[in-house]
Each structure stands twice: as C-alpha cells, then as structure tokens.
Amino acid sequence: MLKTLLLFLLTAVAEIVGCYLPYLWLRKGGSAWLLLPAAASLASFAWLLTLHPTASGRVYAAYGGVYVTVAIFWLWWVDQIKPGRWDLLGATLCLAGMAVIMFAPRTA
Image (cartoon, rainbow, N blue to C red; front, side):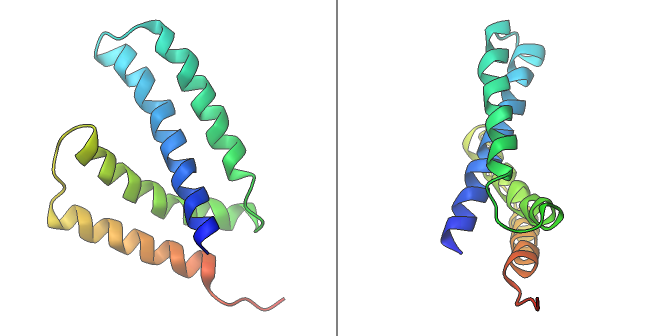
C-alpha cells in the first residue's frame, strides 16, 4: 500500500511540474528552455502510470484523487496560498475515494 501511495505521489509531482513549467514560460515570461524539463517530466508521468500492477482504468481513476491532493499542497508550497478548510476537506474526500478504488478487496 505504501509503495502504491508513493508511486501515485511521484506521478502527481511529475505531472504538475510538467504542466507548471510551460505555465511559467507562457504566463510568467520564463525561458522557452523550460519546455525541455517539462517534456521530460510529462514523459516520466506517463511512464510512472504504467508501473502500477492493476487495471489501467482503476489506476487512472484512483490517481485523480492523489493528483487533486498534491495540487492543493502545490497551491500552498509553490503559489504561497494557504488552502482553506474546504480545500482540505475536498482533498481528504478525494484520498478516501482513491483508497476505496485501489485497496478495496476484490474477487478474482
């Protein structure tokens, strides 16, 4: 279970970085060179999603909950905007949904 959560966390960070760097280039006047690490980060994101041993649709659905949570913390750490209680509640609900999707007992 810890391996799955860590893998989801790394995947979310790779996706957010891969999207944030072009944002810096397009909206904040950053260098076009930011697109190279952005592309590498997005390629890492796609590769990391393939490392999960369960069905891809289940992985994508559960990953969404982790992504939402990481995005809320990105808001805090990078954008310097403290999440409100509703942000944190939403993230908690997303993580609960991810846990149900990924860790519920299944019959073969």
